[in-house]
Image: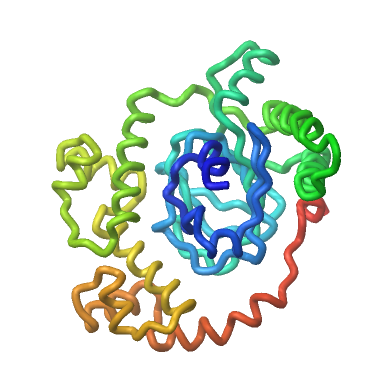
Length: 315
């Protein structure tokens, strides 16, 4: 499963590890060779700016609730309920502010597959979409539901039907999604990949002491160029980004395990209890103890809310 997911989505980093129990419990994913549909089983809570990531596929996201502010590179975008948003390969993207209740469906399409169809239908292999929300046609929503149904049912011949649906979904995006005016610049793409590598390191080593020089070296940039590029792509300095990762990890631990607050403080890379409490309060508006009480008591309320499906987006 992990190999199938990362073959289309790329290596992330993502808010949840794709081989974790939390991922399997939180996410429904329907995979065909070139297209995948990803959807949270319950509305995603408490995702934040630290969850910016990149992947090598094209991504199209439809929101079933008004989204918070989103970021694609240096673009800030608000996605109204029932609208879709395109994201090109290797573009750093994610929330630009904390998400308190997000309900969406993400469609990932392998880059080579979509570019080949673009070449065959429009004689253009260089393909770039505009980061501008748009209303998907009802036919596209129907195709999503058909794709999910065939993926779940596993009826005889479902692989052939999924292969046909892949092409139909991709062609609909080529027809209706807003196209950009130019293909991504090679230097900008390389810069995005360098920053993505740095973000992977921050996610993987968030408990360790921060070293700007080491991070810049890993990204293959000078310290000055790295700081400028990181701020341009994420809107924050590397240390601010790392702090957001640490706070997010602390929020997850406070919500889902019985470790003491002091233990969580050190497991998330903070140097001491008072510093942890101060930073956590600044980011969330609550001290860790109050956050734990409120979030754990609110879990049962979250489960009561049913989620709308793709068929509801056009209503």
